[in-house]
Length: 198
Image (tube, rainbow, N blue to C red):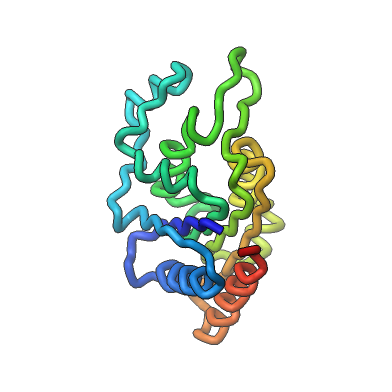
């Protein structure tokens, strides 16, 4: 498959960067075509511009400034997102990628009457979200009810790529884990990717 790996972490030596490298290696070894998008290293601007927001319902969203990101998104049959969960949500950089790149005319179309949007990402089949959290599992799952999974699965993929299958691999208490525990998590991520069809 044509796979897009998107990373959103400001530190080049972060745990997320290490997991990203394992993801890319695993996908290459399985025979997939891999494109990468490091939002911080690429100096992606996450802020939706006034012109972009003004065009949201005008039918002609300006993509010149994000043409490369749009091209990679539209080509992807599978996406791996590697990011830290901060305040039980996406980092601002990744949220801005959704705001600007998953735009009208790209990821979806607006209904004429401002009703439900119409999906455009019919070729996107798989998404794996790999995320690190400082909190224990029970806070995310029981207290917060997994907000990242709900937003990504229902609000974003559910409306823009309804045929897409979402998997979420969450590494809890990530600052406190031993190297062996991190390695077990990395192997779990690799196992998920090996199930993808080539």
